[in-house]
Length: 193
Image (cartoon, rainbow, N blue to C red; front, side):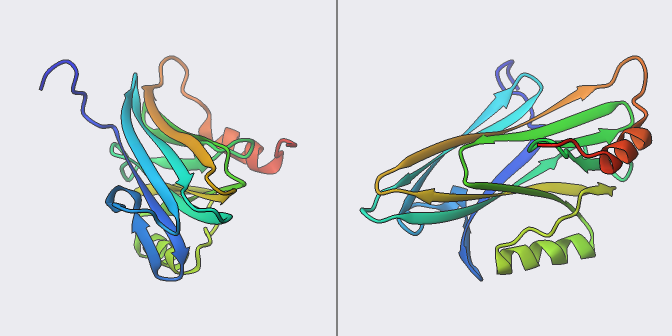
């Protein structure tokens, strides 16, 4: 492997959703999906990975698009704790002396986020989300899990919208964060938006 090829630290996947049982991975779209063209560009951040996306309404009509983005931290293990940020569109993951963070930059009409544990319960919730087009709120989990965003867009004729999902990891140095205390306080004293 040369110096320019860094191994991926995350797996980021997008899924366009139209209606129950009508969805397709963004990477497999060869033509427009409900009149929306999709352009993706994977990137490598200094400490992680990113996915830049562009959606273009190629019709003369107003269109809606719902997209799910799944982010999996490849270093996630049974000792990992995943937490939703209460004040922005970020996820935080803690594993021993490592931390990972994921966030989305977008002009979506609506952004929702959740964690899905990679167990039978989480997989059932994910299947239900694909069927109904609704994320089921799961704010904290431990063990193997994936992070999920749901972005909803409304497009005027020929409108283009762009965004980016990025995920980074970093080692924790010095004092260990008092994670249980941070989570308890964060859930009890939510910041006003």
